[in-house]
Structures are given as C-alpha cells and as structure tokens.
Image (tube, rainbow, N blue to C red):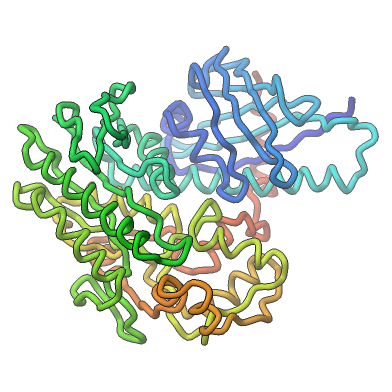
Length: 485
C-alpha cells in the first residue's frame, strides 16, 4: 500500500493553551468544515480524547454521501491529539494535530496526515495531485477560520454566557451556534413543537409553539442573551397570498411570543437580538441607506417594520433590543450564492436585469462576528445593518464571482423574465436596488474580516490557493524536527 503525507502549518496569534482548548469545545468540528464541502455531523462522543469518535457524512465525489468514522487514538493536552479513520473513503488515514509553543502569546499549529488512496499502487499521479490540492484547499480554510475565530473571541474577551438561539438549524443559525460554542459560551436552541406542551429533551433547549401561543418560559430564567433568527424562507418560490401570510406571521407571531415571555421573566436576558432584513428599506436606487433611513414601501419593507415592532414588549421591559437588518449572506451552504453556483459552474452566469442595482452583501463569518460584537457592546440597540461597508452593483458582483470561480459570465437575465417567472418576489429581491451601509457597526469599532467581495467569495468557496502558504516558509520546515510523539 502506497502512503502519502500532507502537512499544513500556521502560526496562530494566541497561546498554545488557548488554541488547544478551542479544539475541545463543542462546535469545533462544524467550524472547521468548509462551507463548499460541508460535512454533515452524524454523532460525536468523548471530545478529542483517546477513544472518542466522530461520525460524518461527506461527499467526496459529486453528491453521493459517504460515511466517515474517525476514532481518536492519542491525546496529550496542549501538545497533540490524533484520530484514525475506521470507516471511510481512504484505505488508511491518520491525522495528527500538533501544537508547538512559539512565543508567550503565539503558537504553531501543524496538521499532519498520513493517508493511502484505495488501490493506491494503481492510482495515477494526477489523482494523487488532485487529492493533495483538495487537502491544501480545505486546511487553508480551516487554519484561516481558526485563527480569525480565536482573534475575534480574544478581542471581546467575554465571560461564558448562556445564549438562546431560534432558527439554530438554518444557515446563519448553525454557523452562529458553533461559533459561539467554540468561544466557550453555552448555547441552547428554541425548538419548535406543534400541538402539545412538550418540554425539549436537551436541558438547555427551550420548546415553543408560535401557532399555539405557548413557550416553555420556565427554562428561560437566567439566560444572558436571546438571538431570534427563525422565519419562513422568503426567496425560494413566487409569493402567493398564502406564502405572504406565512412570511409575515412566521416573523411577527414568534417575535411577539418570545418578547412577551422575556418581558415577564424575573431574571430577563440583558439583550434580545431579533433578525430583520435590509428589505426594510425597499428599492431606493442610489440612495445611501443607514440605520437612520426610513422604511420603504415594498411588501418586505412592511414585513420588516411589523417584525421589528413585534419585539416592543421586550424593549418596554428594559431589555436591550437590537434589530439585525441582515443583507445578502455569502455562503455556498445556502441563500443566494448556493442558488447561483450551479449556473455559474456551468458557464451560464451573467448579470440580472440591468446589473445596475446594488448588492449589499456580507460574508457568513462576519455575520457571526457582528452578532458577538453586538452582544459585547451594551451601548448598541435598535436597528443595526449587518452588511459589508462595500456594497457593489450586480454587474460587478457577477463579474467577481465569475473570476473567483474561473468561469465566463457572458449572459444576462432580462427583467421581464425575472418578473414573469418569479413575480413580486423576483422584483423585490433580485431586482431591488438597496445600497446599505453598516454605520453602527463601523462607529462602534467592529473589524470586518472581509470588506472586499473577492476576498469574501474566495474564502467561502475555497478559491484562494494563490495566497502564500505557511507550509513554504523555511522556518516552519525546521519545526518538523521538533515534533517527537
């Protein structure tokens, strides 16, 4: 059997103890899973200590799911841990995570993988190169995410909080939950039930039934923060009268129910952060929009206004209330980017309508980071625009996306087609011109990870292999001689 060795080394600006403990938190596996190659966590037991196991569903080829089970076979705190594939697509796979002190406030992390492909002696060199390239892409993403997450949590240095999240299974919610947990916070989920007053089996989760007007408020005492993200999906199908009703009621009913429950608690949370959307402002052409701008006259504008108004009981009770006016979130795991990728990958991408309408976007990691910033700053309340400070026109967005993917973008979708196929939904989402600035985030000192669209897209799509790799640093090559396990 022919084996290969892959290594990835990165200097992390944090003590070795902090970097090692980050990996022991719940959520680490999810945070290290690239969004373009998402692994589904099936189960995990025992953390990273010897004997622990992680079971995943991965898709190494196309969309065919493959089971992967890794068992941890070695552990020395603040020095290394190791896992071995016991079931999966490789003939063998042994992954050792090394942690080397560098200075008092920095360390070197080295991922070292010995692996063998099936029928390794018959595998052509091109396939081996493809596997190595894919590992480089994945582990570059993992190391960047780890370094940035640790730096973000270090910036705010919050004591562990008890945080309740609704919509935790969605694209934003799942990212936020794992991000908060790796920061040492205890995160519970608001779990929707229907019909009966059943209590969530997990001790930190809370059951609720918006339609029935019931919530298990007895489990909500002593929660530090509530982040409410749940709501009917807006942009997947044309808006019928019934769909519009679900969009509105899924937001106003749940928000009002949660806000009333929070206002009646003996020990209410310090902050209630409720999702909204930049659709609040409507189609405004070239007007620069901030949190001080008035609401628009579109359907979504009226939904957002009523959505935010439904949180009034919490604000009236003295709970700091924040309305998260979220822009176009960039991640291939969901939303607009997931919809565009198959078209662009086929070389059929192009501008939408005139291409002159503004796209107010934000990277998924900056969504999570900005939420943490809001939790940490007691002075932030009311509406907050969750967008990058560099909105772009649709034609430029399309051109940059095509360049990142290495695909041409020669086509255009006429406005008439958007209107005919998607109706009002298409006009208020794909064609709406909303140029939004994150005035409050900037004025309160939030440091964006990605302000340039190309950087944000490259990160979430794993398309930035041209960056200088720490693996090529001669200083790091000498470090391998220090590792003795």
